[in-house]
Image (cartoon, rainbow, N blue to C red; front, top):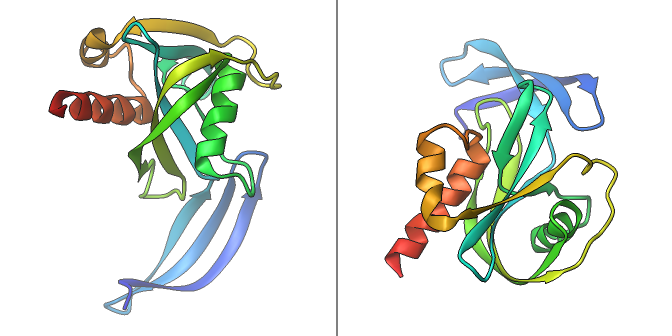
Length: 178
C-alpha cells in the first residue's frame, strides 16, 4: 500500500512548460491533506566531452533566477521522443554538434518533493559539427572548460544548478574509477 492515497485531483494551471495540479490525499493515519504537484515533461542533460578533454558547457540567462548560469546542455523530451534521440537533437540545437557516442550516466528526479520531472543524464563524445535551428537557443554561449577545472567551478558556485552538478559529479566519479 502507498503511504498516501489520492482522493481527488484538480488542475489549477496549464502552461506552455508546466502544469500545476492540487491533489487531496489521505495519509496512512487517515489524515487528509493536499499536495501541490508541478507536472513537467522528462528531460535530458548531457556532459559533452570534446577530443581535448574539455567539457562543453552553455551559459544562458535564466529568467527565474535573474542571471546567466553556466550549465550542461539540457532540454525537454518531446512526446514520443526517446531520451537518447532528445540528447542528439538538443546538442545540435544548443551547441551545434552531433555526438557519435552517447553513454548513459543514469538519471534522477529533479524536484521530487513537488514535481514530476525526471532527468536522463548522458556522456556524449566523438562530436561532429551539425547545427539544427531552434527558436529558444538565441543568446546561448558555448563555454569550453578543461574537465579538471569542473570541481573548482562547482565549489566556487560558478556552476550552481542541480542538474549540472549531478551530471558533472557523476561523470567525474565514473572517470575516476576507470
